Amino acid sequence: MARTWPNPPAGTRESVPLAPWTTLGIGGPARWFLETGSPAQVEEGLSWAAERRLPLFVLGGGSNLLIADEGFPGLVLRIALRGIRHEPWNGAVMLEAAAG
Image 1: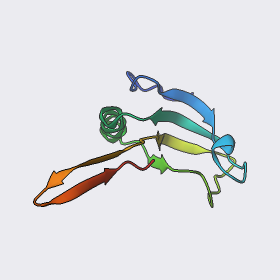
Image 2: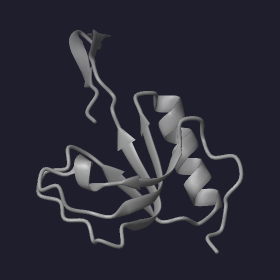
Image 3: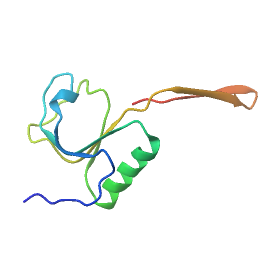
């Protein structure tokens, strides 16, 4: 029987097929899957997995990625941060570009 972990971050789903998230369309399910565009929720997901000593995989665009048919036994974190921020800094401009 699979172990159930209490209180995953909001939006976390169980047994999510990973094949649709890869460009090759290959891969079994993630035990836990969290897609988020919120920095706070990224931190929450990281903490949740660390506290439970779960394996963690950060999923980007899915290109050049092969996932075994057995899937991934921990948390797959799909970070969907977007946007560019700029502000004056020390006589120059500081740019922060989200990438996910």
